[in-house]
Length: 390
Length: 160
Ligand SMILES: [Zn+2]
Image (tube, rainbow over the protein chains, first blue to last red):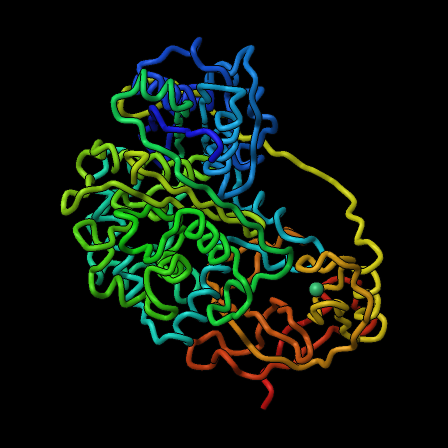
């Protein structure tokens, strides 16, 4: 990074399946006000606003214009960003580049989704090619289900392993006051839940949530002057896959899969040898249980084929040696345009020691890694630390 | 809508957005689809640098960023690399009608190709009848029913 950039504040809404109590402006403003309060800053001090969601999920376009009152972008420079599931992290990436360039000192990043207002299944089908695969493009669940059958066949994982991930996420979510699905469930509950798309059951999948997240990024001088606990952005990496090639679902593929490529580049930038030891906590983007186990492997937290053993041995529990998604993750809260930013914000809260009920207390949290993936197979990784020495 | 909790009226209005559009398939996709429609044949395209045979055929190899040039006729058999049994009545976005659940669909790598095709599997939708690595064969619609999209494939049949 040419210039150092820190997260100096952030906030989120209470996420839920129903938020008819607010419109989109009101929802977004909830998170923006929380972030400004957290940073002890007024909107006048913000010099750029980066804003985004998944396009058309609310049935309207140009949400940056619709929601300018709520986001605080009135009269300010900034960008609208829409990159599908990754959008929240891409907004932060753009914010980081704004500040790192030296052109801006305080960038407000805002991501939101109000899924209840639109037909996300119908909009998602527009992501698939009209002549090559759209007729089967029903929902994300089918893609993850194919990844899951491939994973089970290749490595011998069982439905029980998926259930373990499902339980871990929802039990962690119960500790998180903002999470959507705070479910006191057992492995048996997960295994008994309704089959959606074999082998994925209801409790193996993320919910459709409404919510927003906002974060304020600042240059080093502002961060040191104004913030007691800045969290430093140490490295980011992003990579696209090619169109049509959905071979990430074949877990044995030897092709350079985007998430692995991105992870190895980020580790090289930081000089990471063993990511499971280098990072103290992970907030990863797992719309389905199986995606979490594949992430373990793509991030090199274990060898290929051993991801399900990490969860089997409680390695990634909130009090385990490699805590993954103490917040409850995307499996508990998926307000698409905010989800990837929530990973970064939750990772920052862990470093600050401000995560509340879901704070990891079994070890000192100095470094964290947040991941995102989504539309057209692209991935974004963000590495954070509490001091510039780490 | 009245919220039971605080009895405050909150208006929310159902609306429909209808978006007609005309999609241009382009030169490469058009040749692929007309071969499928008129002759029942699958063609992939090979990159002159990395030699990957890609489906559907496209102008540029994303990895090498060179123009793809060699059209390769593929067989109509391949290997299953992933599958699911769908229990949700998913709407077919191209027809507006739901696919009747439960149904099996999967990803098949046609012999000679580096890409996969997703389509229905003509098997009983029970896990015991489907296995990763099983050999599959394309079944096409009759010539007069083919229109020039992937729907011209009826399904994949297991090779017995
Ligand atoms: Zn090539």
